[in-house]
Image (tube, rainbow, N blue to C red; front, side, top):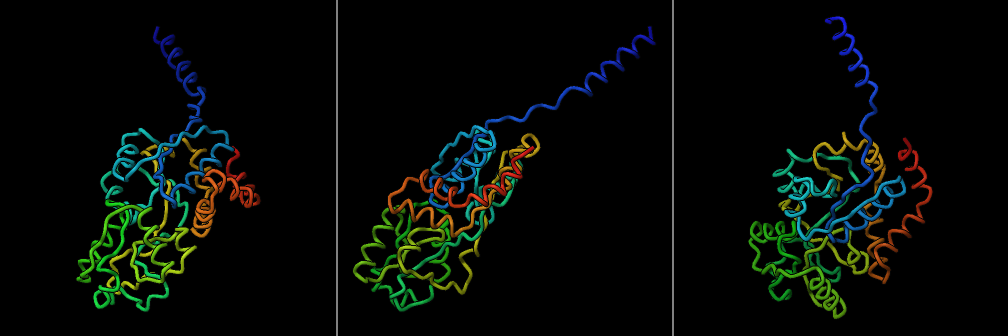
Length: 283
């Protein structure tokens, strides 16, 4: 009986050893923010994954807290984000349930800018010219990392100007109006942005270092994603989009193309690069 039992156990062990590994899922749930720096990265990576045989479902979020909560819970699998500064608080809060997959771009910079025709160069010069700026710095959506940093700059430099909350669209309209009239205006702005491409503006120097240095974008995932989806992880790691290209894509959208058209045009113009990525896609 003992001999038979040993034989059965041995057979069972052999059977387990020859079972195939669990197949990798071919559907990827991806999150994004509907912002002009993140949308091109998401669109390009989605297309590369689809070309590699994956079905990609994209969910748009309105703010980082909701997006990171969804990723930490596993409602989505991957998300592109700037974890070092812009979304550092959300990363730190959730990082035990998350993982970094790969860097996908670098060069995000945010700060306060003025048109180049305005003869000041530093945040320290704003107070002495507050009246010329109507006592305002025109901001964007409340809750954005850029608004947090600018609020800190107002405090650290003792600025007498009010940081005005609003929207990216309202800030853009205000910049265009002032620029067309050669009026003084200070705005919160960032690179990559089609506005930096279209309007000649300059970032005000920040001698106190309130604003962070140029930042990187990463694909991050729900913890365990890379181990469970090794091929998808390699496909995603093959993608790298220079910051200047993100700016150009958004410039094309501002000129009338849809984001899908602009992304597809970028992919078509970079066929050789995509072919090199093909080597990563193959098992």
